[in-house]
Image 1 (cartoon, rainbow, N blue to C red):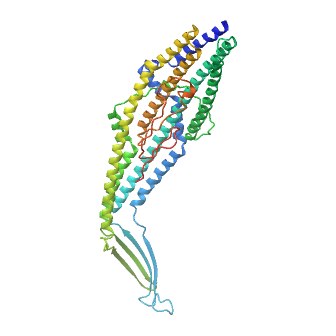
Image 2: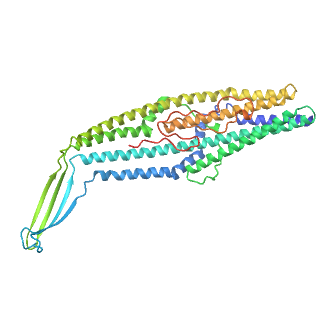
Amino acid sequence: MRRFARLALGLIPVVGWAQTQASPTASASLPANLQAAQTEDPLLKSLIQETLDRNPDLAKAKSLVEAEKERVPQSKALPDPSLTLGLQNDGFKGIQVGKMETSYYQVMLTQPLYWPGKRSLRGEISSLGAEASKLTEDRTRLTLIADVKRAYFGLLLVRGQMELLDQQALFWQKASDITKLRYEVGQGSQADLLRAQLEQNRIRQARISLRSEEQVLQATLNRLRGLSSEEPIPTTARLEDVLPEASPVEIWTSRAEKESPELQAARLGIKQAERSLDLAKRDRYPDFAVSAGIMPRGGLDPMWQVGFSVSLPVWSKQKQQRAVSEQELRRRAQGSDAESIRILLNQRIHERSAQLEAALDTLRLYREGLLVQSESSFQANLAQYETGRAPFLSALEALNGWISDRGGFLQTLAQAQALQIAQEEFNLAGTPAITAQSLSSGSMGMGGSPGGSAMPSSPAKSGTTSAKGEGGPAMKSM
């Protein structure tokens, strides 16, 4: 019996250690400057910087921006001149140049010219296209940063869950020893012993799943920063070290007006459509061409020629007028698209602000009530078991309740981070979730509380980003 008492009392230090790890008020009582310092996670910063330096998608976007800039001078250039070489000869019996006045060689140069204003409008349209490609680069950058953050916080979540699993494994190992001892002395049942062994196997099963998720997230981070999938990523931070702060909706709305690549691209699209409309109207006016040539005649005096030609828009009703109507309709469509994006962006900001407020309230409930109460419940059940007033499995089930609440707390932290990241990304799609193997399932014991579910996806205007950091919202090309 002394050995049995030592095993039971050996559980108490682990509970105290777990309580220290999950101090409900630890982060809440941090000074503001320390909380700000925690936000600057050096590992996360280095991962983001490596991604921006090495990621091929961003390098591709930058190259396309430079390519678009090269189109601007092309669009403003004059059409290439044409060189005409000819021979006019009298008769077919021989070359009569120098013998007959109407026989000569001909060298002529012709230069087409646009109606005034067309070249500058073409240049403006190309310049706006180059600006739009720069916004595509900005979208790629924002998405990459968000993908890195999602994968990084997902990795912290998984490793936090693995720590909880280790704690639970320690308790169940001790439980197995205690039930085995009680069974040997005739005070316990075989069912208790089998239950303890069953839970140990369930923990092994959950650890396999978590390790798989850890490898996937680590491979995702390595892919984003252009490294081998097997490159280790040692983390020292914990998911609960940084708590997102809810900012007023007005601040996010103001930032989105200035920083959302999709909204800025749509507004550039309106300007581009307006310039295209002006060009279509200007195309109703004719273009010109000037030419000059010289006609050597051998020993006779050379002849010369200058000319001026103009195009005749005789089919303007079928061509130029239709082009004006087309560009007017495209301008209206672009205006509607910009307004649609603005409304959707405003909706997403309000949705995420409300969800983040709810997540932060839930976290306060965890810190101020659930975590403390579930741990107290476990300690009370353990004390009752020690005095013989409750079965040992009731204490261990209370332990599972506390582990479940800790898992729910971590999942809610990850949910809050996911919402914050989506806000910073100005994601038009539904909020991509950061999830991990839940420890609050029935297979891990009884008890627990809500909080481990993933956020539902909303209908997306553009592509979504997965929980593992794949992909991102796509911008419309103009």
